[in-house]
Length: 68
Image (tube, rainbow, N blue to C red; front, side, top):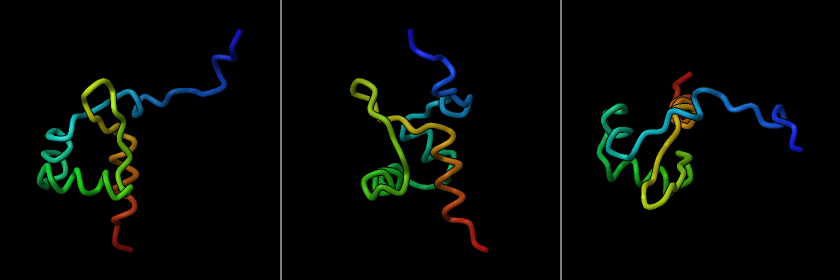
């Protein structure tokens, strides 16, 4: 029996958005989102034929871009 607490799923990880939704939320083009994913700067998941991005990945991406 697996320990259910081994990997607690954060609620932000459950909220998944397709690329057009991510582009709309970030105010950038769909191709810009794809470039960020392809460049490894925005984490994405392939579920079936869809590419999705979690809310936690969007937040992490924005934190990397923060001007300090």
